Structures are given as C-alpha cells and as structure tokens.
Image (cartoon, rainbow, N blue to C red; front, side, top):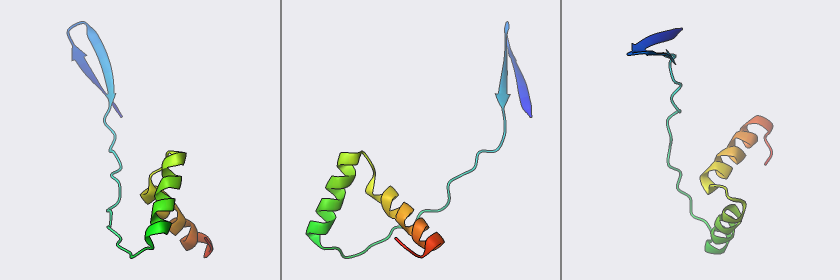
Length: 68
C-alpha cells in the first residue's frame, strides 16, 4: 500500500512493502586440484561470472534433476 509523503510543494509516493531478504549463506570448503581450480576461475573471469554463482547454480540443477 503506497504511503504519501508530503514535502513542501512536492508529493511523493513511496512503496513501503517488505523487502525479501536473501537466505543464509554457508561457506563450502573442498580440496581441489590447483590446475582445475585455476582453469575454472579463468573461464569464469572470461565470461564475466562469479565462480560461487556457477557452483550454486550447478548445485540447484543437481538437486532438481539429479544430473550436472
């Protein structure tokens, strides 16, 4: 429900709806081969993507389909 805020000669409407907060994050630690890790980070960098985002997407896909 919009709330009207009156300031001098201006009328502004502000939406005061609740903002959904992101879920809790958990740090994941694994031992990886150095070359594999370096190549993965380089590939992510070339595509302009964050490695943790790709890993999270892969986990979600695995949960949904059982395949990577």
